[in-house]
Length: 117
Image 1 (cartoon, rainbow, N blue to C red):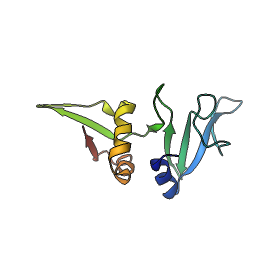
Image 2: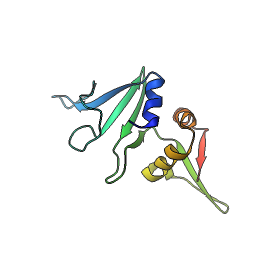
Image 3: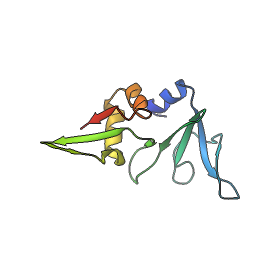
């Protein structure tokens, strides 16, 4: 379990496995394992009331990461500001390793919090 996942649990979020029931509807159930695997739990959904945060495997060959929602990540090059970095696992992982986890958490619900590359 990552430090960010521990933060979510400390904030009252409960970890759930994401499964499709026999009617092909998504259900959230208590996980039977605590590890990520392409053969089972590709990701977990952390739920606290109506708030849902998905964390897990997203790109092949990459470690588990924050999948949804994601913080806003922008890059400034000269006079240009480029968006779209939030869609890339490498940049989200860099945030998770180098930025304050509380600030990342807050940014999931406040689009005024922006991270710059």
